[in-house]
Length: 598
Image (cartoon, rainbow, N blue to C red; front, side, top):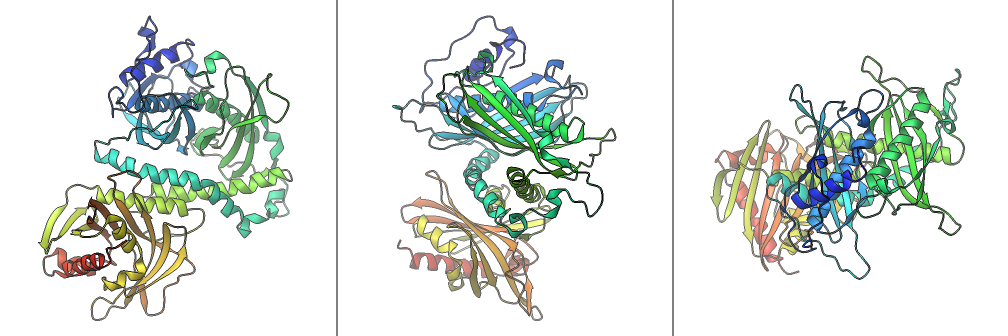
């Protein structure tokens, strides 16, 4: 694992499985055996505790600049994540994928790497593991975030074995939020390929533009042929490259991929490149000791100061019958070149070859668009982010995730202050920085599933909510997401009518005991301009959380992170000058109970 001895990785792996914490394998003299009591349904050792790895960066881990090689870091991350998965499952696990990674800091020789991995959620035969990496400067004592990643591991079973992983039991509000959002992240992974396909159908990407051919507005052609950046390498899988299951260690494959990708990136600019980000690693099949792995890398496109490098891994064995090689993995890595001043260098443009080169060029543009949209949605602080984000094919999965995530976070907040209770309906509020949020909670004699369906159908909301005078569906994204145009009343004598364009994302529970969610947030669509004589309002975060109490009894909670568009409707209630919201949600309860039959 650290290049000193082939068996040290296996020793440390066994130690982490037993104790849940990495220790220095150099201090061990005897190889210890795995406990015989690891079962699928039983509780593993130190259940609920994360697996932690601490490594001192030595010269053998670093590149020529004295920085920790990204490939070595990926190996350590994969080891820690895999052992966390196996600790929870009580069975052997293999890496299925690692989500996008953005590197915020470089790590230098002499610093310590602190890696923590925890299982966020267990599905039927797979687990999501959250991995966080920090760097510890031993001289100053300062720690900084390096990156965060989510990996999916799959239980390795024989054909006769039936596996049902035990559920994860979160113990803190942060763990609960990660647990709930794991299902949403899984949903994003499944739709990632479809999003790319939809983008490639866009008219702007359907045809290769003139700049693809390297034409530079009549000036000299300074573009670099894409084929000149191609790198190929063959690796023989030896026992030190295998994990404790006999398969090629996933982290080792990722490290080899990063090596050939960095070589391809350096071919474009004639300098050593720095890894900035990685798109999803996706393992499509296993390889084992004795396999030959062919790794191919090429720069797909360059964008001012960043370039995308595509890497493909195929496996073959001398014992295999003649035929095509096995596709093992593919990934896309983003590199930049730093000047001595710390600024990023402007990169030459790519001139792709006809056919596959142009296809890769177009796909790189689509992936860049997805990356930028994702970064914009996820990195903006609530106080800085615009309330209404344009809805596009490239960001629809991330807007839906952000919608559900914001409601989950708001519902999990502590410190709510009681405002009033009337007729079994309670109003709470909380002030957090510049935001004032409120929660309205009640019980209704209605099955949770039926309450969920009724509250997510905005066409009927005008029957109990006077703020929804008109409502029409603009776009049906899928079965669980849709965009609506809502028109409400004017507030105040001289106010104009307000209208809203909102994304509705509804989610059923994945496990017993989890609530139903119906989340709302504002988006913008060219097809929904502001009507005449209206003021466009905005919704930061709102929605319903429905929890089943009994077969025909549910707890319904409404949350709203109030914006200036919505404060006029609720300010009197929060100040105790009105009970209008109690009356409105009394109507909501009557509506739900009147339509309580499934």
